[in-house]
Length: 276
Image 1 (cartoon, rainbow, N blue to C red):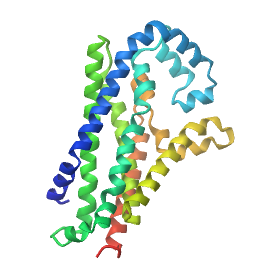
Image 2: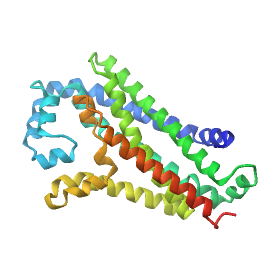
Image 3: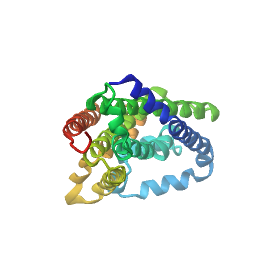
């Protein structure tokens, strides 16, 4: 890794990091500030609606009948259940958008602008370029996870509720691992195409397709296996936040995909003849 390139990448992304961090913090705060009102007025209506949904639809939302009983707890939504269903379920999608935008242009944009030749004219190898870009995103993902947890902690204090912040951290961490996987395959696409527009379209399309598969898979009896091809299938914030179950298998899936895509990106860019 090139330290100079790593810090330069972070510096060039500083305003995007601040913007996405603020968005994630404010969205989490908004959800928690709305919680008391939902509990008081709309809770019974929402509870009746959720209990009327077929099991396939509940599975598409990342929950089972047993989990639903736990998050409702006979008194309307628990704060953990509300936070998981209204915010954390969507967190990897929101952060994932930034992931594929950043990673799909990480190498391709340098090649398109002609700055890659300038980079490689310095004592920096192709492997160092790819590694520095990806490690910069790992740092960004870590910052987004910390910002999200901090925002939730502030929101919980503001509404005077109790919440297991250890579970919150694990749930967001699992989402962060999913986001890093999205960045890893986006980086690979960036190295293959060396065209930021094509890379962004492909990476974004793949992410959208995976999300659709995770939603529709449980509703298609004969094709339920399709959902297992989606990264979002292995992200289970309700299991972590409500039941305290952090699936190690999910972490292994994300780490394996990240490692494979990152290694492939190194090999592809090393052998690329489009950039001399």
